[in-house]
Image (cartoon, rainbow, N blue to C red; front, top):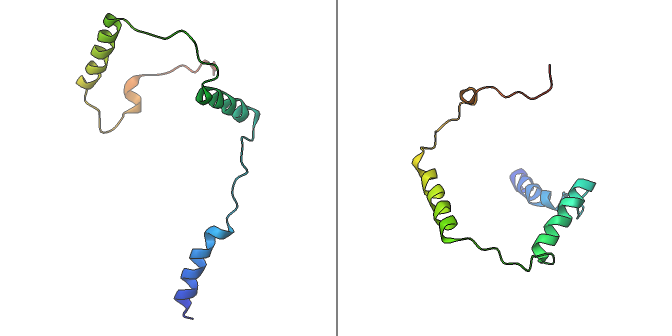
Length: 91
């Protein structure tokens, strides 16, 4: 076999040597998040009260959504343009 053929065969075999991550969440925080996501997707804790909105609420929501298109999206975001944020660390 040519060396290039061996090289390509080696590249093809690489995924076979990779080890998969163990299934399931690893930390308690991940387990809690996974539990909430499972509860949400299973629809077991859904409210029996339907959530409705009035015509006025729907109109205000639509107007807010349409207004969001009036601002041009900048090509770059200048991080210093927004001012300073106090982290509360008291430095």
